[in-house]
Image 1 (cartoon, rainbow, N blue to C red):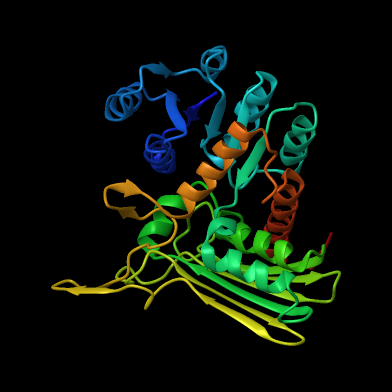
Image 2: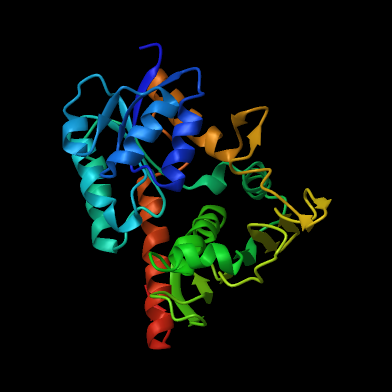
Amino acid sequence: MERVKFAVIGLGWFGQKHCEVLSDLSHVELYALCTRNESRLKELGERFHVKHLYTDYHQLLNNDEIDAVSVVTMWDQHLQPTLASLEAGKHVFLEKPMASTVADAEKIVAATKKTSKFFMVGHICRFNPRYASAKVAIDEGRIGKIVSIYARRNIPETVGATVLPKIGPIIGDGVHDTDLMLWYTRAKIKSVYAQSLSVRNFPHPDLAWTLFRFDSGAIGVCENVWFLPEKTAFQIDERMEIIGTQGSIHIQETHPNFSICDQNGWHSSDTTYWPLLHGVRSGALREELSYFATCILENKKPTIIHPEESLEAVRACLAAEESAKKGQVIVL
């Protein structure tokens, strides 16, 4: 195998980002696309010069030429295409969060144990050089034992309005930092308490704060506000502060990381996750998809993240949503 033949199931905004990356990796062939929207399927098929187009992922999975699939459907539609892809003998890259229920996430983890094919959930922050560097420093013991982590991941109200009908801020964005906290502490979450607030009466609340207690004794706080002012200069206000017994780590991913001031004011565009550089979709998304494809080519199981870790992040975030609804501490 010289190149991994990849298919993308789900061609929404982020499915398109997957196509942009996969179509430009030298060790990948973007081989097939699937969505129920026929006009969208035709549009992206023509744009990326993909001939194998499907409106039914079952038909796609019958194509023996396909080595791997990216499942980029909505989070509450992850289970069936993921299970079917694994059963069909495909390597599977699944976008985060792993599933919309703990039971579905557990089914996916169980399915990964029944196949020799590789599986990875796209926790993109683990491929962000700043968060990855923090992991190295923590593992080297440079800040001692972690006692506190504060994470902030907020987005403008206009972006929030497009997502809140489908998913809430705790599982939608808090899952990133919950995963990082579990990764950094190597501890289990004992209890969770969260508060949320609905401002615009979407199906999900506009903002939430979550407090975790780890079995190591550490405390973690996640701030997720999908209601920043409309004219906020950046798409994500993203920060993390990690306090240890012997030091601390501070990450600031947004303004003034990179800023442009024009006639419409200040703007700070993404320079990390999926920036378009020299006509190529780059950044952490490219790194993680390239890593997964390289694992397939070299027959080396992915080790940067394991299915069980993705499950625990879902478990913690859904417990936080339950806590916010009930106004009670949830013990895990």
